[in-house]
Image 1 (tube, rainbow, N blue to C red):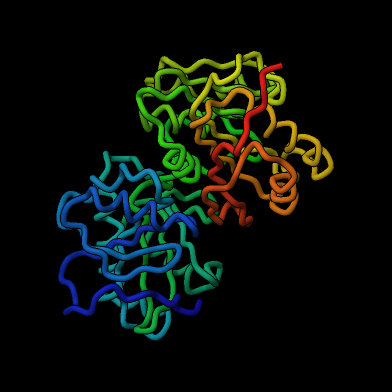
Image 2 (cartoon, helix red, strand yellow; image 1 turned 30 degrees about the vertical axis):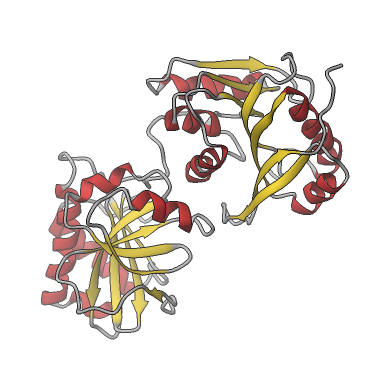
Length: 359
């Protein structure tokens, strides 16, 4: 694999501290950097649009609480021409040590198996590496589902191994026990709730809440006065209810209702989020053509004049055409993100020049 081009932050002498890599979704870099600033002494070495490398002299477990990053890895660099050289005694011992350091961060038997993430990971070289490493760290090799992940990639200086520090990605929340097709990545949900700026005085609505990702991440990010999730699907609400039960949250109200015809009075909410159908896994482009304008109109009715409304969609051309043909909402900010092979847009909307009167 070709080395990724990285933006150098500051030229300095080579670091003797362990190097870690933080992976995040493209488009979320400013939010990750802001969150990282709350961890004292974290020193960024270099960065790209979807990852950064850093030193962290404190307990690395501190960074397991990051909510806007996808995954965290330890980085072990090898000045070798090809992965086969990792089978050599000196390099192999360093590979084993990097895996054992990660395993030592967790209770015994946390990891059940390991796997490689690399181009050519099914080659004879990686098969030999798997056999030898399995004996050394006493874990079976599972090419598909191994929870100790070792990514092997080429760099300008040779090769490096990135060992994920947690058995699941940071973006895989502990509360998630129920999934639905088209579910939102939790790091995107967290950033959307950053944009909506939930406060203790907020009356928060997550329309089309699905399995509850935006709803739960919103509730976890701040103690809003009122938190409501709405979906037209009883199956989705059942899934959201299961996920909520695996949190310590008690103040979330779930309601089965059509998001274009809500049973709320006007000006009921001042913070609104929605992951609307994108027209692929959920909904169709044709149905979105009717849904989007009706939905924006209803959100304008139940929103206060100072409301912040954050919405994500991949049906971008349609949504922006709908925005041009209505006056209730104006775009205050727009963010392009990477999400499961798509590049949806997050929109921060504010109220337009006039309001819809309550019917």
